[in-house]
Image (cartoon, rainbow, N blue to C red; front, top):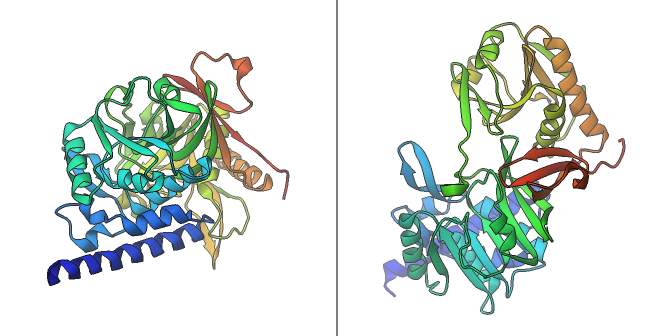
Length: 417
């Protein structure tokens, strides 16, 4: 090994360990613990082998690296390391370890497949599939360069069986899915696990789902974002513009007149506040799904508000998160979860509304926030059942009908604070 090569290898190891240390600290801040096996794999696999053309420093940033675009749309990327670690942790926890497991990865890139190869060990197997031949060719080349020659790389549409008749202990999906095709469940072993970034109500969470006969039952979830699924399983999100730099995300076939929102937004907003003091660690992603479940049942339409930075800076809207905030349209009144109101290191929750019933709408949304807090800030659970399942066979919860499945979102409350 030349001096230059040795120096680069040493720098790679230094950056890799620093990245893993950062991810472990990020886990701790979220109340999570990285499994020891995942930590060992992430400290071993050289991420730069899967990001050719990118500097070592860039390869070890804790962000996604785009590897392919179609026009302005990102079609493939090497996912952010912290998110990879969280999803591998979900899989490890749900299965009690991955050693000796057979794994199917849907959505290739090479880096995640190499980590999985380390986790399953010599007695396990990893198959990675992608619909884009450019992606699978690149993944195969990167895996070979990194020394992972026993990962099976397949170019196919994973909406259909990848290796007919084959069962896997784990299916892990690294593309944003709108629905779960029956073949994913059918390819799992009897108690196998599916880890999938699933869009529900226009918001994406990585769900670890365990198979139970014809159902999938959630084990854990994490907030995330991914490039959308392509092929027969694709479902394009719709956006409608309601003001300069302000958009509504319509992902569940909502039918709205965008002119209603456009007409009321310029009017003075009404606001309501919960009157609470919450710590920064409060998991507001769980609150957003709570709002989705309740507003879907009572408003004309549940929506997701997104906004460009200039729209927030100009004061047109002040959402809780400009990349996706729960909102509702009820009659001619539009409401949404507002930006937090901070006092020192604690914050209050609020809602803004525009329209003829704005004060009442903001107040109702805040009441849902208080109800979530009074129920001890419950985390959501998910069941996924076949699309023809009768209503009477569904668990209690909010039902979302997809193409292949009926998804039931529930919250296990533990009483008042």
